[in-house]
Image 1 (cartoon, rainbow, N blue to C red):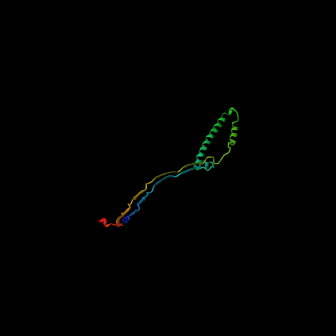
Image 2: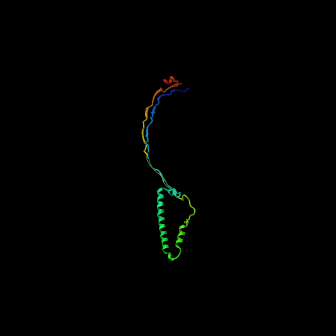
Image 3: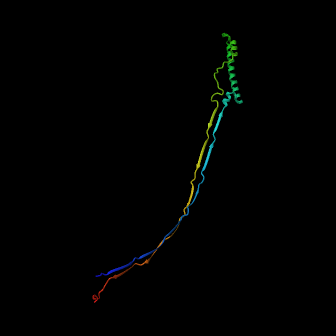
Length: 193
């Protein structure tokens, strides 16, 4: 006894895809930048230093005096000598006026007027210490400045953007199919009957 068999043949379906890729173009222009820096303003005020040296006393110690100073000293010395001479003559006159009191005033006066004066002197320095007077007034500097902020101007350029979208198209490259056949089927004529 034979059994009937089914024979099937199938074909798979195939889809064809046509793909067009998207295109994107971006162009970025550089930004435009402008910078201006105003100069700073600087003002300097300076008073020059001043040095004064007074050596009048040192020159006088070395007997290098000016004419006006010599006149002053001579006048002062003459006045003092006149006063001391006047006092000496008055004293001598008083001593002679009282000669009756005894003593020998003429001899004492002659001895006193003939002796050289005794001067007290030790060590001396020419010129004397600190006879040169020095005075210094330092210089003064005043600075005034003013700074300015920079002027910055920026222009930003937008990017140029072009976009072409992609596309996908589909189609059936091969349609699916199924073929079925029955093999070994014996049909009796009796049974047909």
